[in-house]
Image (tube, rainbow, N blue to C red; front, side):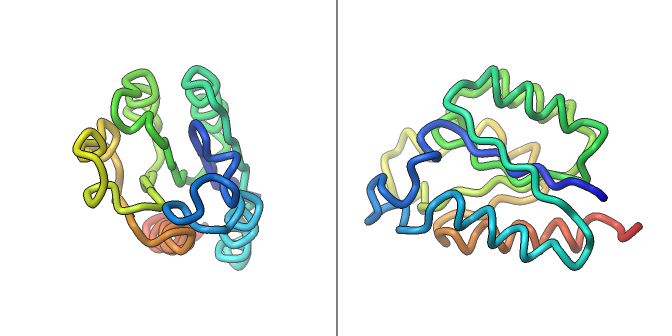
Length: 146
């Protein structure tokens, strides 16, 4: 069975409770279940990793190097200055889609640039939890069936 890495950065473990007016009411467990349902037909297993530390996220990318078909990455605030995570994803040999629950361009100006986006196969912002499902659909289309 192939694995899809679902990588979530700082503060995303408290989704559903954290500023629901910005991030919605879906929990990370809700999102994981939705992504798993989206990719089940391909036989992909979702490996979900949420960490507050950039170093632990880098380790998750490296651990998924050989076992994963691709990744959905919500780096949270690490999109702004997560240079170590950026370097890990630059070396990651699979496609990944960057996802943000809120429309980062409708928010504070410091959120308007992602150091990861130029490396991503695509970026989905502002669609809430639906963005993760759309990212899964994009990866299903991008990764050849085996």
